[in-house]
Amino acid sequence: MITVNQKHRLPWHAGMTVREVLRRMRYIYPHLVVRVNGAVVLEGDYDTYPVPDEAEVAVIHLMAGG
Image (cartoon, rainbow, N blue to C red):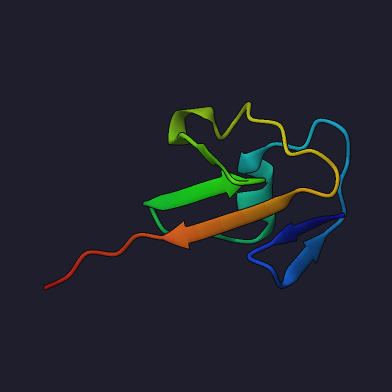
């Protein structure tokens, strides 16, 4: 299992990536900051960055406004 934003638990499987976690959690905002076990993941790496079993994933929506 992995934990997302300290409250959601998802089943883990070998080969899981950040992109899959975002899809399964239905994050649709265009600008996100993602950390896996404290390490910031660049947007260009979402498709290939592995999420290990028991990972703590943090997803933060960036919003603009004024």
